[in-house]
Amino acid sequence: MSSEDWPLEANTTVSILPVPHRRRIFAIVLLVLAAVVLFWPARNYYAQWSAIQKAQAAFFAKDYAEAFRQWKIVADAGNPDAQNNIGLMYWLGQGVAQNDARAVSFWRKTAEAGNLNGASGLSQAYYYGRGVEKDDQLAFMWARKAADKGHANGQHFLGVLYSEGRAVAKDDRQAFEWWVKAAARDVADAQYAVGTAYALGKGVGKDDAKAFSWFSKAADQGYPNAQFAVGQAYSQGWGVQHDHGQAAVWWRKASEHANAQAQAALGYAYSIGNGVPQSDADAASWWLKAANQGDVSSQLNLGAPIRKAPVLAKARRTRFRGGSRPQSREISRLSST
Image 1 (cartoon, rainbow, N blue to C red):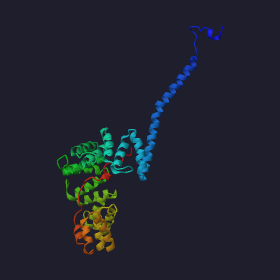
Image 2 (cartoon, rainbow, N blue to C red):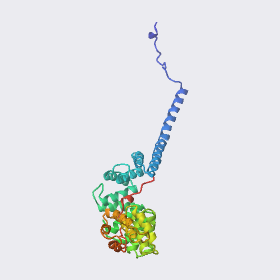
Image 3 (cartoon, one colour):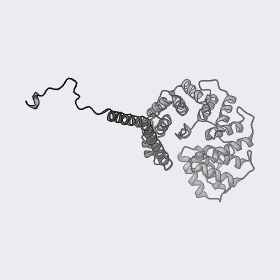
Image 4 (cartoon, rainbow, N blue to C red):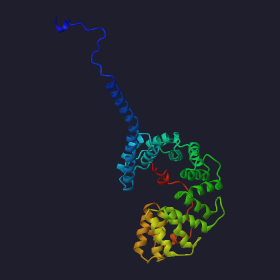
């Protein structure tokens, strides 16, 4: 009889591991599954954490392309703060081609998920009509959502809307109150707006000393309009003792940020040697910078005898121009994630 003819018994077991071995393998499988369940999220968390660290380092090093690439990794994983940052970089064209529609798309995702940075950004997109059709009602709605939950940029922007009477009755007092809240959180736009309100007596009693104080806070953060205002205050003695040297210092700071008013004022200071050594060449140089930005008084002064400077002599006695319209650089601060 051959082996092929050898009959198998009905209860014969073919290649089955002993019970102890089966238990051991089952335990190993469970252990592997548990490791996957427990450590895979940790691995993803570490990957996102690492990308965030790289993004922040690259951003502060002004390597915006690398910052964008790293934040995009985290944004694609659903991190709302990273999505806000990607939206802001699209808005500003940092590290990527400027694209308002893409910015709005990212901000909408985060705003609808309750992210206050996204809501603030989206409100300003509707205000300017960038990347989306202009809509004051939606601008107000998103600003209010952010402001009511204590978001500083949302509070500042809500003040802007009240100040301009956009989608709501114009109310200088309401504007001032929202700006004060944002200013207390170191939003430079809001600090400048509060200073403007005190200087012009809009929504609050006129107070040059308080105006100077708030302008100084914003100026110390590098806000060009506030730096010009501080220079004006020193020049005219508004809320602070006259000091033409300090006026020139602050006008120069603002001028280096391409503030045309400050460039024009600094040109005048050089033309008569007020706070700086008299220099026709320096006066003309600063007036030319301002004129190239469309400053009419500087354009006229370049065509007139420099020492007379009749137009700017009058302009420098004019109070700084108030205004609180938000600037794109302040639209929505980068989230720290």
